[in-house]
Length: 296
Image (cartoon, rainbow, N blue to C red; front, top):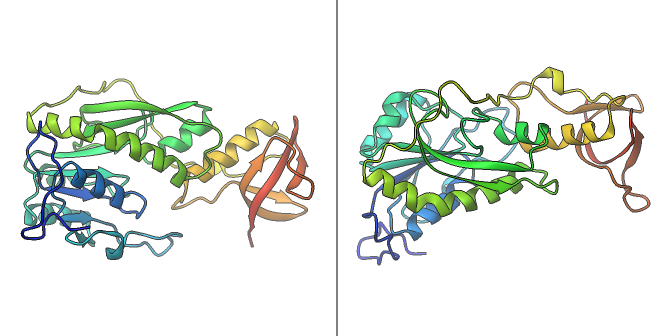
């Protein structure tokens, strides 16, 4: 693909209701940043830089690298959150688009772009504010989740709403990656509306400050599997933990099977083909463990 920032390169068709903008993407993962870059460039906007995140020592997966991005897009890995504002000013961006960034952006960074900073949150805000909205939605047996673009402000997930929709959360989705692809598709479809509202100076619809729920990381009280619980409860617990993904402090869900500790990865409530899975009789009903990792 020819980078839009390359001198003399043709620009893709642009959304005629909004001028071409310089947009920074603030995202940490290879599953999130490249699709957002592509969506913005397909609308005719320039993406000079992606603000990434330095790999923590205990991070289990791949973080965004320079080879994940198309030519013409820089990758910046600030050592401190306080450095983000200077980077955004240095690239003279009109807008910053944040998605799943694992660090709270300081107020100076949020205000650095000319038209402000927006964030995509996978919930129907103000419900499920915080770092683990989809995990809590699964834990609470929700059948749909929201996808909300909102202006960023000094707090987490409290800014005015610019666009929103809902998508199904069916029980076939078991991973962050599976949910993320659906959220990104819905989020990308709303980007033209979001950018038009920013260009018009539209502040969006304020969220209620007296409603809403917090979706923090799961704690120890949900990390251990109790086989005396109903099979449906344990099945939901396993799925919620696996969709929630990496936890910085607590590992779950942990179960004891034949005296050994395992982290459960996949279960089913329906009997699988012969020779597949391990059957466990629970407090109510049976559960089959399809995948698990041994723990020391």
